[in-house]
Length: 455
Ligand code: PMP
Image (tube, rainbow, N blue to C red):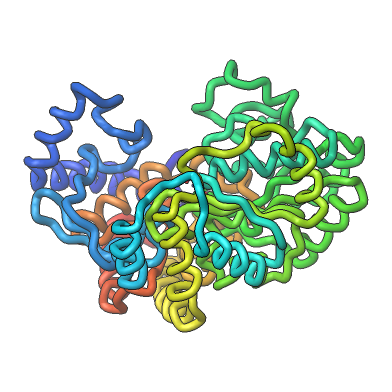
């Protein structure tokens, strides 16, 4: 069934219809703009996936200020989606805005580097522990280049990812386990793009036996892993000892370990790498790191750097991008690292996230729902499973996609936006406690309207 346990299917269907109608009725300008966009954009949206988000007409943002959005039809929203961490610090953090304003008068791309670049890579080395860093335009690119360098360093072809992890627009990583344990492209990714059975092995998160079997042939260049699985609408934590065993198994089999911190920066000022004391060979990130300017980064050990320097001595190596490390992005990164990713800001984010989590947990308990709410620093999301999920397989098939849509619309129609795909919520240093309170009240109302009557 696509209806999560504890939800009344008839009430869900009725509520979804009512919320869709309410959304459309209050947004004539957004509707008109959508029709105009249909003539020049796929699905009438500038990125195709916006058309798959819950609202029948996409949100048309007029401006984004602090942790709030204002749409073209005059509605205001508390924004807990925060662009899936890309706007993690708020939409116009004063330190980032000041840095960008100043840099605009000094040039935004030069194909050279300045002092900011060195300050940033020094600070990254200090925070994340890896000595050498390179700039990219996106987290997808950071993963692409990290995987390439892992292959160069090891001389091996295959990679390994965890089931249902997301690492960006890379066909080789958009891979899942089928019910028969076969490797296949993620649903919705074209099977003709790359023969993923040749490129990629997949195991469930927290499954050390499967990991050991997959690495034993010593043909895997790198394991690419989120330190905590965040995609798919849950916080899936590593079990005790998982990361130590992952590091041990990769070392013993000559496999490199790439930690993708893109979504886990809300865990703490040095991501999960610092929070958990991880010791990877490469780290990738993007999104939030330049405060809203497109940017990504990958860091590497001395061993990988030595191989990478040999490899790139006389050519481009298939790495890089003209727009990577532009002074605008790097100036913003410096401001983010030194003025925004502070212990004080993280304490605020965590405190509000803990409140948001408590509000959700109270509603789950009140209705006796077999759901689980999880938190990672400033990030909160709930799964439609009774216990904390140990892998993403437990989250699929996508139970509750209609419930997630109904919840998203119920909240958004009343001024609260959460992540449109996963339902996750993020707290920024600019998030107000009153907005967290508003979410708690609306969530209680929504579940009151959706929950199956007891007895
Ligand atoms: N890694 C992870 C863990 C992600 O969640 C994402 C995007 N959601 C990416 C990489 C890719 O980021 P981008 O789409 O900005 O390239």
